[in-house]
Image 1: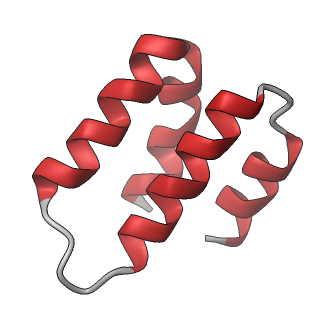
Image 2: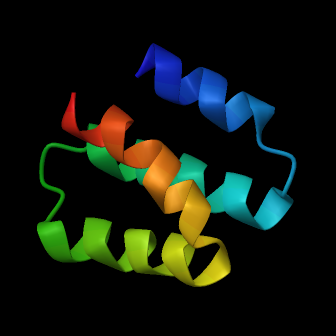
Amino acid sequence: MTDFSSYIKDVTDQEIKVLLLKLKNEMRKEDVTWEQIKEILAEIKSKDSSVLKDIIPFLVD
């Protein structure tokens, strides 16, 4: 999460930053569902698909 946190810190688009923080917080929850994560990822993709490509490595590691 540290690298992901650094990535979020460097994001200048406030809408994207809010979505990334929301994603980070949801992933920390024990009872989070794939549907909840998928919705946030879809929002990020609709705003800027390049961000989604950037964050995938953080999510799978």
